[in-house]
Amino acid sequence: MVLAIIAIGLLTNLIAWRWRKFANVIIYEEALYSIAMTFVPYDYGDFDTLVILQNYIIVYIMTAVKTG
Image 1 (cartoon, rainbow, N blue to C red):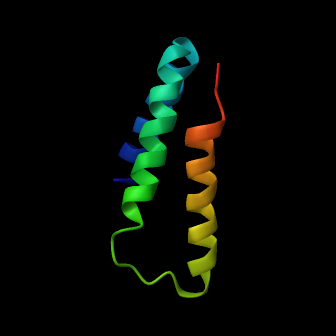
Image 2 (image 1 turned 90 degrees about the vertical axis):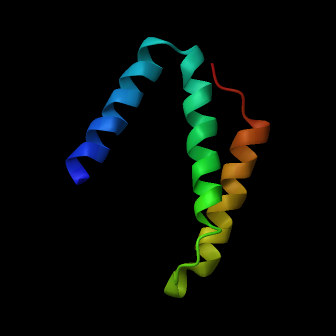
């Protein structure tokens, strides 16, 4: 399972490197996935505030930074 996830990550990185216009799609997809995963009930332990900060950073990247 872990090797499949690594292979998918490498494939998306190669696609983004080859076609720069596709990089925006990957960034937005990853950001939306990370935000959606915060709605899943999970005990983050001592990292609750870190997860919230990560989501703030993701939203900032999605809205304020233009790649290319």
